[in-house]
Image (cartoon, rainbow, N blue to C red; front, side):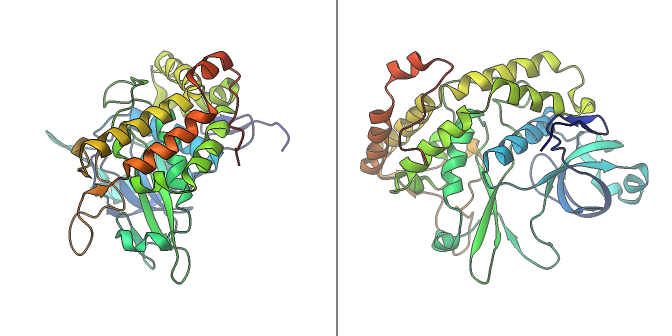
Length: 347
């Protein structure tokens, strides 16, 4: 694709890969969760919209936008996204979209908001955010859970990884990774990215990490992330809608510089996360997910589903960790500097 500039409502992408801008038409329903998102029918289909005025923070939609662009760039299964324009007529016709605040309703503002495209027509097909483990064999893209584990280490996702599942055929299911509002070390107020992994040792579907394919997928994902250059990241930073950024330019510059630095440290961060899993598995046969990490897809809350405890193989985790250590020593990583050496068995 030839280089060109596309500008849509203040949004510009030098590669011409601007997301669509769609207009909100009808509120379908409010979604559960702290962000008080809404499912909305738009001029371009159905979207789950997080409003700029959401009660968590304006920065949440910046995080969603940047993470969505990175996930799509890396080829990790995630929803298509768009900028959702809320016009005055929509807001007047759908007053229920207002945010519930401590002192009463907070109106959603006219302007651009972040939307994740709903993969199927919600009026005709079901979407699940929890499934029993007995159905995991029907999920066609389980490898994406391994890829997004590495991604979450890179972006220092402070929240538990969430996913949605929907039918991709008569029996098969597909998964999409969602909810990145607390990526980039965001704590609800500030961006504070840390090298010490937090909540990553209780990531969803932990038993996948000791499968035969796990090390191979980890090895393939790290160099793909490391290939994201500072120029690539700067282009994404510049593409954030200005009405969302407000006075956050300096803070975002620090976030993106740290993101670039962390891409070179991924082998270390991954090894630390696997060590955390192994240590917990050695100390107890059953591990209860930390409630601070939020709900974990694949682990239902109640009903005929499994309990919210996972059995983790310490032996299997040690095998994966050992294989990674064979490829990268701490000294080699330090020597590589800003030219990281990809794993030899990538791909």
